[in-house]
Image 1 (spheres, helix red, strand yellow):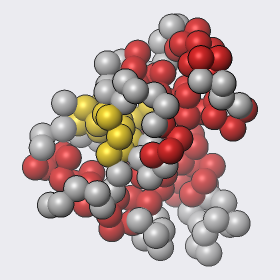
Image 2 (image 1 turned 45 degrees about the vertical axis):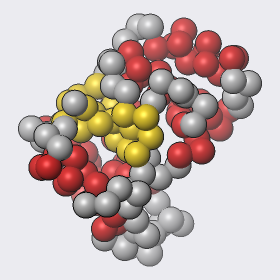
Image 3 (image 1 turned 180 degrees about the vertical axis):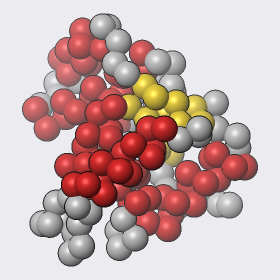
Image 4 (image 1 turned 30 degrees about the vertical axis):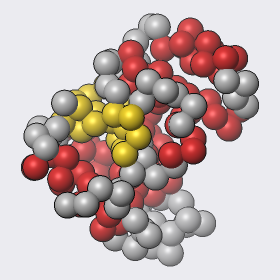
Length: 149
């Protein structure tokens, strides 16, 4: 079984000072070690991770770009990770979902993530932003800290 991972969970997993650091670490460890899941990482998610984790407005001690790139490579190359790339069908699906749910410009990347996961038959997503994905009924949403160990 594969669990898609949203950018916010990756950021919280890596950044020790992030508010959901421990919960994100526990969720991903539980999924891999106890449930035997693989983590579905979309290329877009790693690019967003690099952008967010290096932002000094978000973190007192942001990662350097070199460190963010290193983390991205480690995650991408991890044996627990399934690399997910968008297929040609993703753009038409994003357009369909955006129109169907009357979503605005701030929802483009979340919609693209949902469509990319759907196109790769990944139906579970770990996210801290449940509200951003609730409209996509094809995804089961799992948030760090919500499941007892």
